[in-house]
Amino acid sequence: MEIITSNQNSRVKIWTSLQTAKGREQSGSYLLDGWHLVQEALNQAAPIQAIIATEAQMSAHLIDVPQGVPAFQVTEEVARHIAKTNNPQGIFAQTSLPNNSFDPKYIHSGSWLLLDEIQDPGNAGTLIRTADAAGFEGVALSAGSADPFNPKVVRAMQGSQFHLKVVKDVDLAAWIDALEENDYDVFGTTLSATSVDYKTIVPEKNFALILGNEGQGMKAELQAKTTANLHINFPGKAESLNVAVAGGILMFALN
Amino acid sequence: MEIITSNQNSRVKIWTSLQTAKGREQSGSYLLDGWHLVQEALNQAAPIQAIIATEAQMSAHLIDVPQGVPAFQVTEEVARHIAKTNNPQGIFAQTSLPNNSFDPKYIHSGSWLLLDEIQDPGNAGTLIRTADAAGFEGVALSAGSADPFNPKVVRAMQGSQFHLKVVKDVDLAAWIDALEENDYDVFGTTLSATSVDYKTIVPEKNFALILGNEGQGMKAELQAKTTANLHINFPGKAESLNVAVAGGILMFALN
Image (tube, rainbow over all chains, first blue to last red; front, side, top):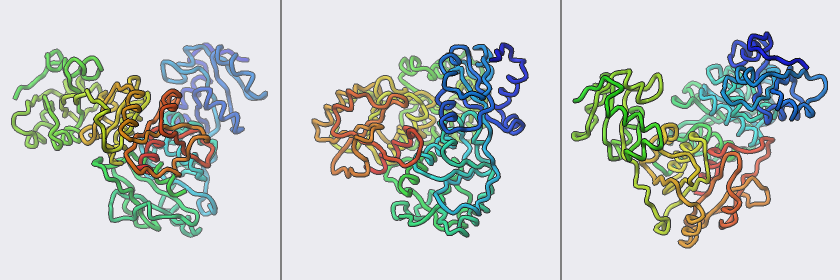
């Protein structure tokens, strides 16, 4: 097994580039940080280009890495350099990005979550994790949303990208049209009490749920295209709910 | 109005100390960062010891500050020093910590959220904001939870601390005893499918809901003292839900 001790190593340069959208694009891969995520990738037979670990992590986990997966041992300092944090666990995987060419006209089953410019990486990742738990088929993120393969989103997804489809940079207007064409109900969300109280809705067929930007909400031109727009009534004085919490309440109530 | 240009100013030293638990304790106050939070404190007539703002923010908002509230103008650089961020909005309030001497034996109405070692500031703040929206009477945080007046929690609470009671460093075992003595149902939470499905519960009286640590869940010795322990069934492959999302689902279903 190759042992890498320098931050100037050409592979290390590629792994550190995975912190950026450009680096992920160029290599067609992204980074999993920590054994929990690496193990889930192995469990789900995700395409892994490299396992990278410190000596301690390698001796703990090499037995679980299938033959044929390239493994590289790195120093603690190189591990910190790759992770861009001071205390990484010390085990990573370089994993292929999923195929992002996905045409919504072929969607005929399962519920979908659509994210309209959700910008906070923690919110985006938590929403994908919650959609996974709620049994959704996939999550589509508009251009302008957080990149689902940026390290902060990957941390918050907790491996859910291996359980459901995650599609990025989509044109939500086109997705709404395609899904409605395929007999989906498409539910938008608003903060307005004049839209439909989600508690009155019992979906009887496939549906999609759209959540909007943390500050601005969902775009009005998308609201105009939906089957119905929903809101969450609440008795308290808070102005609004965190979008990931609102999404959880809606996904668990509707699905 | 006093104009402060130096980070060495004695007031500035107190305001920067509010980033730490010790500084908040010593001054009996905490910091609100940004007009949205300052305005909510003014709206709710919270006790404000100082309004601190850059020239631009002061000219925009001084008209909304009641007479008698001390106001201090600071340079952009002092504002960054106080905020400990590079791009603060440039308006702050130093606000008194709420009275933390709160005996649960006097609780006879309203629902309460109890947090057992919720450590992530974003989760703690979002849970308090969600409890506010759901119409809860208060939130009690165990010793070992995030400090609800640390700046990250304050940001995530979005002003909810002015709408409900927020009590920190509580002994949850004593709270459970006191609330049950006062005829409350106290619901714990677990990840175990052998506990009660929350969908089967329709609270008919006052209740408290306990959420546990992000990694370890709720302590077993607390689970043993509750009226019942609940879990959220889910169809998907995710291992668990984010605790703030789980809390949102439970609070909105139960209250």
